[in-house]
Image 1: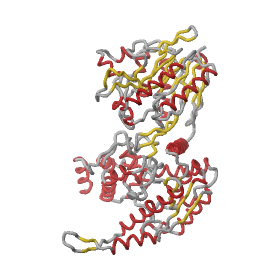
Image 2: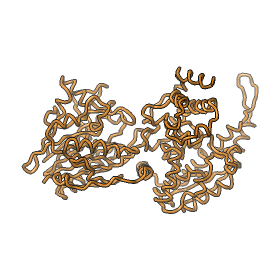
Image 3: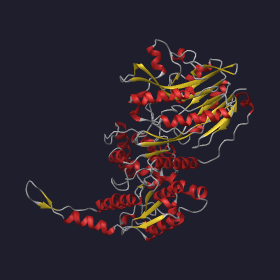
Image 4: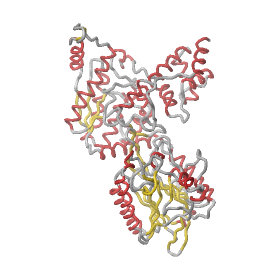
Length: 629
């Protein structure tokens, strides 16, 4: 009776020594539990998102060396694992050494070669080159190899025959994307389905994205059901990044029986090993579908991501500027759970424009969390800066003439934001022995509603992939579930969102940000997260047809409520589109790394160029038609 172990491990990118030690430990655990086979994730040895570390030959040699350690440890057990494979005699298209994203199988100190492969490992067939993925930059696919050899992938892609305790088993080996073939010219799973297999294995390095696991269960469950054999999906946990965007890997490794039922799921963000009997899987009861709300998964992704980032950069303390608003309050509640209240310093920095209401709410939040707290007024410093700028002569060295700068009310707002971050928070963080956070949400990040070197600063933007409505949902979830009491004050949840940088943003008078979040969250989301991204042309087509809310997914009636005329609607649309495709790009380039949870996060996931706003010919025609009515 074949026993198969699924080893869900934390993969530390760029550290094959650490990862190999974890693999060897799990091999011993699997052997002790009587497993015949143990499965590890894709790229379990080197990690996946490594940037151009893949161009370092010394690093590649190290990965090979650690791979040999794993092969040597396979006595009396079959070990399946992902690693980079190198053909030192061949080159990639960029002229560098040939690298494959490979699926290795070892038994009794030897590699087991797939039936028709020219190498003793399975090569990844489908190379994702979208969103955060950049596989074709570094790896040679099975498709390219087939063309090079004058054959087809279907001739090379083949099962692996395992000989275990006198029995033969045929396994179909897939690497992550090979199981997600809807938009490719052919499907590796279907090619292998023609063989007589005993089970499939999909080893993955799949970052967490909201809703992905539900889709995977539908896709992989259908594959197992149609093939009539079990499928084992093994994913890693941990944190990996490609510079500007940081991704959590949630694990959620899953076993599907031949009926397509989910019969075993490993926990999110935890290392775990489970052993299943292949013959007994068909009679195992299906696990109940999760009824958890999306916000629960988002919370765990953020908590895990923040914790792991702090561990990676050896930072034990955090500083957060709190305003009495929802974003900084949610950030504070999140970080308090990660670092502990004793290692969290909250700083309230009021000016003359901050109301007694928000100052009181800031104090209430700090009391609820029981953390460190400071109040540092900034008005004196802001006034001093404005006075210096306006009273210091500006000399034209060509003519000798003198003039003076005039600080506008808008510039004065920016000075406040920069004084809070560049002076107070940066100094407090250094003195406290930690780093200070950026608390921007995704709507603000989309249109650059922030100040460079001000509230956009920080070591991490943990909330910058959450729309405002998700930030509110997270506040409720942490109060109701995580803390089980009111930590984020209800007053903060109820108050109008406002930067409080001028009298025009007086919260006690109901004056707030220019962003109308119930509508703009969804408009901005259409610019970024739709697979076929929306443009002003699309939005005006919807406006003309009366289907804006339907297409955006926002509440019905908001368009008429906020924009009485077509001119009002178009003016608002162009205001935000000009910012989204203009100055906001420059700000996003300089923003802190963003922790990704959505189907399209800013940074490497959403690649953009500073080309300025553009309006299509059709948009201009629609605009003229609507304004003429």
